Length: 327
Image (cartoon, rainbow, N blue to C red):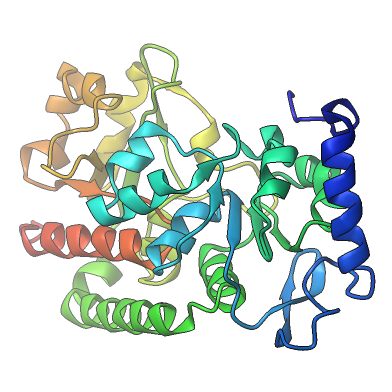
């Protein structure tokens, strides 16, 4: 970990943080409680109830909070980086918003705290491993009100928390209503199919070992499972996700027992590059689902805010509409 240690950044940062500490001394977790002109309110996150500005003006996003914040119309002043593949999937306007913010490091555990403090944020939003947050928590709080969510926070809870803290509830409400409407429509349209079909979701990542794939039970498929009630395999409670286990290509044949296979595609409907080796195997081509038009490519641009989730649901809706009747 190469997180910037405050002690090595010299007197300038120490002075800046000391000044911030004085300003926020009566406010506990950062914020602007000493300024009666700034309206404050309380928001709950995994690090407790935190006093935040009612209308934050300078927001820093760390880790997985960046894209949801921007997706709901937020304009962060500082961000940690996201992957090129994630950036490629968001609209151009959102890309411009991301690039206009100051980059604070490649990830949550490598935040440049001196640069962050110099941005003079009034709110910091962070989602990253708890162990990493604990290492910087006491350095973030004196700078600004800081809200933290752990990685096990359900995506809807994270989106709602980011919206509430960032004063983005109008955009959030519109997205949430559209999501609920879409879920209801798919349930109504495909109720018989959903109830009478066994599905399996398969995936493969750039980091996967050659010649392996996974039965994936996390990501967008969780929405199909939890919100639509589709019957996909998933790990038992308390067990590691199925997707953590790499399966040799020899086990592709085992997918024959499922009625429908879903697999990842890009926005143009092509198998994701990492998954392409799977569809090129003769075993895949021989699967009954593949030969009968019951292998469905689904586009999942993300699952931590409503816009990408809605794109996934649109993809799923289109795919289900093409599904031939079960013989």
